[in-house]
Image (cartoon, rainbow, N blue to C red):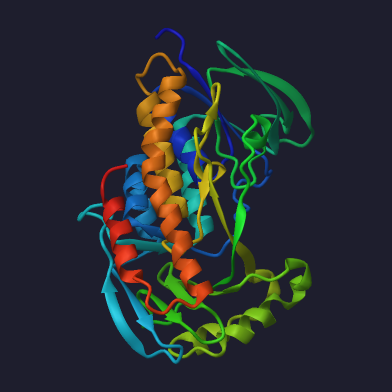
Length: 386
């Protein structure tokens, strides 16, 4: 191929960074745009990465950095609200036996690792930039940009570009999804989560989940040698009714009812700006994830509540599968785009449905639900290659 195919990636989160790295490695000319001027203005305190996410990160060539930056563990504890350990469940190694079952890490650190991989791969990156107009024809996609110049200096410029493929990795509220006529929108599941990063007590070496008490779930995950993130899940509330200045008070009110390591964690819930409050949402675009040569990946196509810690993992898998299928394939036609959708939907749908079901059982107060069975079936599916 004398002239490399050109690809535009809209969105510089996990999925966008991953697909950029993989397509650059395959020899494509890739431009990545990110709407935020600060590429690593990452919301959220921590992230739990299951083995199937680690498998993709290894493929990206960043596993050593992830391993060094995070905290690996292989089991999850189920506790009573007072901290009494009721059961310890060994995690299935969904990425294969050579990788840990789970790694917790600080979300901004993961994002920085992915940013550095994109930079090292030689993609063109423009921050503070959006794709405002997308016009398609039989040969490709014409895009008009509005945003910052390539060198990152101040000022706004309008430019245009022409691409063989546009990948919409612009997240749950994807403007590209709407622009190409896909009407699906995320829907709240009825739950919300309070999260904070805090120091890790020395004896805390795995995730523990407490069910019951004033919230549905209170849990934590180690994210490094001396850090963790902690979370409390409750029924969602009108966000406008919760002043930002009260976030620490609200989370502390819920957390103080839990025992075990929670008193140490709760002592650090003091700064409202450090507490993140979000609703759980669900999205699953059905039928196809493309229109013409514009294709959705990651949260733009699907999202689920974090009851199985699979949001980032599924997004990373999307990037890996799309890069595999579009590397060496010719032509890039509807059949190829649809094959990508069919391959992914068979894996994504049961994970989204299981993640939602686990939360719904709690909302409905179902006490005899087959939670272990559903989790085991889902994790067994995820152990297979995507």
